[in-house]
Image 1 (cartoon, rainbow over the protein chains, first blue to last red):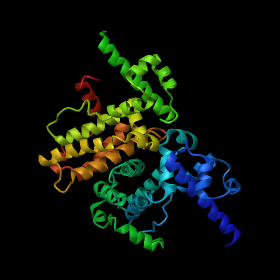
Image 2 (image 1 turned 60 degrees about the vertical axis):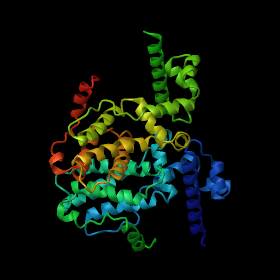
Image 3 (image 1 turned 30 degrees about the horizontal axis):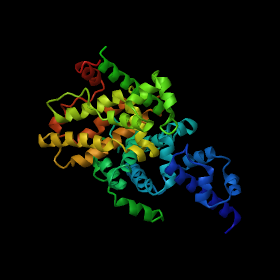
Length: 211
Length: 211
């Protein structure tokens, strides 16, 4: 493997180890020593990429807003649904995403690093806005406002879900959440065309070459 | 003031001080010394009521599931809305409620104490179930499932809201959230009778003799 590619991979390994340690112990109680052990790298390798625990947290947050796997769709509202469904699949599976959420709900970490919710709200609002311009979204919907409520609600379904026993499958709950919400957002002729089923997720992953 | 009443009041003062310290520093970083200082009570008084920081956290959580101020309504779905609106008013104003939420999203505290979300889900599911038995709720709704998604979503709207700048008024956002959600839950003849406006909150508080 080329030196550059190896460095990128090692950076990723360290970042994922940091995310999983943050998830397990919380940001405040996590130590560089725990992260080194989990990543199985030298102290020198870690400090080559990240100068501190703070830098690791910032990089975790930087990776967390992603619409990876979401492909352009004839309907903008289908892209909106796809973002929500794919993240519901990824949140319980990817430490980077769950660590980002934990850093955001931890009041100490939040004071240091802020949250990515404003960026997520913008992603949602932009898709709703584009949908509205194409006549897919009901005219009385205010994209910034509905985007904000949607991102909050999505986050809460994800957060509460993982604490329950048994843990419900998040893609199923998010699919049901879309079914509750979309009739108030989409015009009826678009609503009937939207695919909100959890079964869409594996198809999206295959199409993106991930599954 | 009678001795018994004074003891109850002092217990409440200590509990609210603990809640506000947990809110500010997080559970892990909070100390009994900080709670004593904020409550302005002696160590003896605190230990008379609570044997440890753990006991304080458990008591904060014990107080957090409350439908105080919600009065029986001709429509069960109106009670469902009233629970959500009143809590939206109280969450930013009552340290006990926000501390309970923080303890629930803090993975270390959660491992020790669990969360109150199962109880909240039961409150929501019971109201939906009663509404369905009276023909207010659409027949295909599954109360336990919709209750779970509703509680998650409500929580997330509350959590994300307080991190934004400017902080949106939570009762307004929860009112809008109900407007998005209820058309998928209520039968149309009931839907048009439901009052989801934020202006309902002060009326409920006055009726309960709190406002």
